[in-house]
Length: 283
Image (cartoon, rainbow, N blue to C red; front, side, top):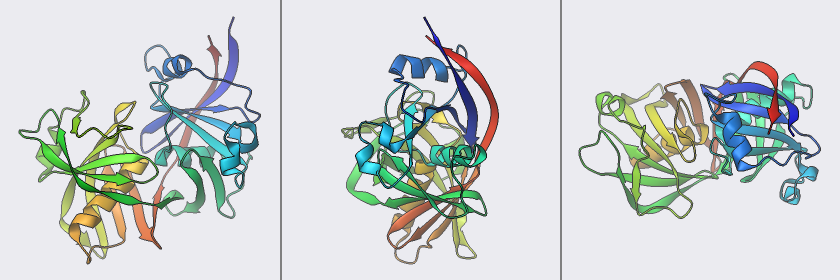
């Protein structure tokens, strides 16, 4: 027996999601169901699923009681993730377009990484990702297309990242990210892995610029990763030293995103789009 549910497809700079509205928390999606829905050949296709549910309707909702809505984000393989920077902007776009929330003022949204506040911005939507942390010590990263392992910097923005600096666009473009890069030591919860190339010059008119490609934990290479963009800007800012700017533009295969650092928090801004709706049968 199957259940038919409505869905919406959305994306933020090419990082795409299946959105399922479940305000009262009636759906219990298994990892297999999520994986099938995200399958690009046999399902709808997406880098993950965003379940739209009221905070009071989920078991751990007490942690986000200050937010009416909770973003239940799952990776394409069905695994649970703490946060998604592109996903939360698409989630906000869905709330606004369906009349579930108004963004005349900033809106708090619950996630497994705590409450994140989303507001409108010139780029679309901006999310305050909160405090961030750079980790001590390098992590060696092996990837197809790199002649030798490279050192990576661990950055936590509510979920874990390892950022690797590369010297040229040619080396970035030559990476083969069809296979997961190997980390040593391997972080306990795994990590998203970003490869970045600073612009030359790095800073123009007070704004830093970099390019990035990413291998997302539980997904693979994606056209964009919002928290990965933030982590990459933070890593380059850390490497650049005290004179580094607080505003960044990060180019990804799916477009451009903005990052700014203020009062110890990192903020991510960029577009969000809803592209089509439909119904799907859940086996």
